[in-house]
Amino acid sequence: METYTLPSFPSEYSTIHLCYFQNVRNSPEIKKRLVVAATTKGEEGEKLRSEVDFGFLAGDVLVSKDHLLTSILTTLLYSFPSTSNSNSEIPSIEPLSISSIPIKPKTRTHNLHSEILLTLSPNNNITDSIRRHGISDTTSNLVVVKFTNPSQSQESVYEGIKRVVDGELIELDGIERNTDWTRVDKIYKLSELNALKSSHTPEDILNKKKSAVISAVGIKNVI
Image 1 (tube, rainbow, N blue to C red):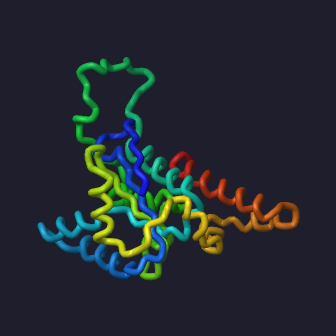
Image 2 (image 1 turned 60 degrees about the horizontal axis):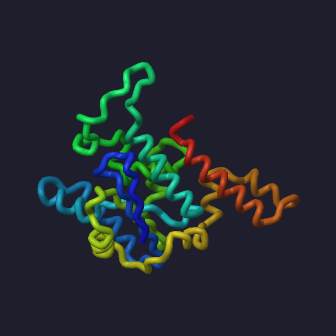
Image 3 (image 1 turned 45 degrees about the horizontal axis):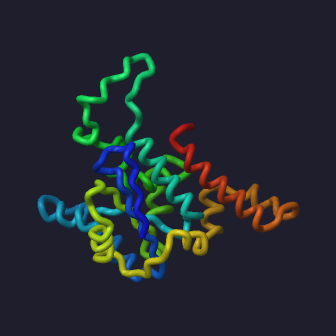
């Protein structure tokens, strides 16, 4: 499990906890829990949603840890755009406490966790992004993401994840070993790079494909 703190973002979302599981055995159950939580109303629904309040990403269509981290940073930058104006005066920092002001993320989906799925998708179709990058009944390699404030410990977050996911926790660098390049090629339309085989080594082509995918995610909300 890896944890990153990005103090430039609102405190409530500034700490990101990441787990990568392989050989996940209960993906259908997790998907069912997500559907039930989303459709249950009242206090019971709130309780169910809090239990599965994580981002669930299909690990097979991630190409590297950098791909994952880029998608998260791109999501945060889109969801918390700068409100500064170059023509306005610089405000006094002394009386202003950014961390004390509650700020809601600007998202096109239900929350930041699902917004990552849309960031990973080459288009802006939410249904497609969930189908391609979200958890399915057959998902065996799974990345779990959790946004918290800095006061929430890594241990408590992991305990919550373990109550949901039944799988083998491995390092994030293991993402590259389990990439399904057939699916990635189709999602990100990499056929032209595959055509370079006659003049490039397989390693060169793979590195070009990784760079193309990461760049596509990095500029997703710029173009």
